[in-house]
Image 1 (cartoon, rainbow over the protein chains, first blue to last red):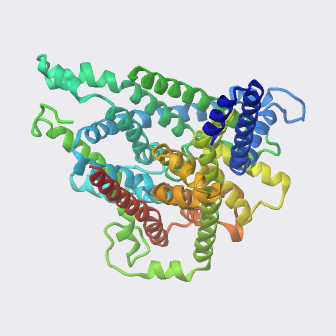
Image 2: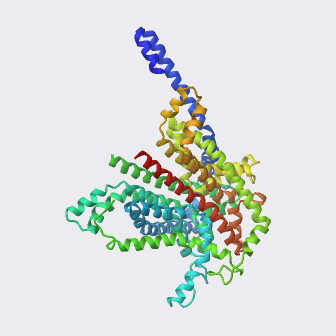
Length: 306
Length: 272
């Protein structure tokens, strides 16, 4: 329609009409943009009112001291009280160990997923997605059954004569880590697989053609090419680990305290929102920094490809 | 990708991946046999079989009420997020207005924010304004926050591979925009829309942390009641609940995955 009007205005060759057309088209475009903006409003309202605004408020609350004055007492608490120091240390420790194990377990799966031919890769993908779909609560509960004193793992270990009496596998750090790795592995495999899928298979063949052994070609060609995807995925699951609540609460048996549990506890412990919101802000900042790094790496990776 | 490496040379890789997949899938399945145990212990394998724990589940008001709450909340979340999410992703796709990238970022940001923070924030808002704490409506709105990014991402991927000129054609032939969208665009995006709905439903049905903060008593969700029971008195009813949750959350996606794959392959064949 706009083309027809344009042509019409060309034939009359009137400068005024051309100008009028341009104004009308601009107006159309603006009203279209406004209409489309209005369409996003319901979704924006939900996220804005229930997430963005409250988090901004948490940020401001974290600078209000117990006595109602503005200050950084809530943050000072973290340095002065050993409870908080221990909690930070164990949170980062757990996140670090879980992430490392996830890489060890996830990288080979992502690699095989990327190189397998269609029917097999589809099946493998289904196997990776299945736990992804399954309720985290159900998975945590099943670990409770398997890892308990007279559970499957302990009776197998005793049966094989590896240990004499049941070893404590759950209600401690070990159980927490086993359960968390189980939940996090698919979160590493999926982005890693996406980045590996983009690696040109001819590069490996070229390396072989030039006399490289498979292991050597993998180390010098494939691994470096998959590195940005690996780093981005690793940072992502590390950050997700920092905010974990369910698994440490259920499999940690009260001995493992991570930051999310502390936030929940201090909400019920203190009469004001200060300490909980300071912890929340801290978690948010760490998350934001890590995710920005990860996003930057992903961008650089895709920019390098083009 | 084919490589010059033989299957035998890669045997260790197959074994390692097989073990990882076993670790990912097998443990969860343990809840199924345990739910049919005849004893009060969570021993595996169960010494004898019975269905008493399913009877316990269906006979207890606390479980039935929680299931009913969860289903209602998940359904409500699904409706709100798919309607609002599809509208938003359509708008973001067809026109690049000034704020569009900021809005897109905002709508998927709940994925990046730890759920405990979202939970604390919503708890605060509800505590301030009143009337939404411990209500189904409040739960639905809260779950919509965490379900929204999944709808936005799924629909964006769908629009990406859809040719918008078809809708233009419909409109130039006289259909209004809404009708053109409903009769031309949406039917062709049915897999994306179905996936969005399913994801929104499941995210809500599974959600625990927000529910822990803002729902209690008669509006406690199934995960919340399960969590409380897991902490206080563990018994095989939990295994029965877990098995039922496994069925609800695990099978529909698998079926959808297979159906979509088959449709895609068929589309590929037809095109070729």
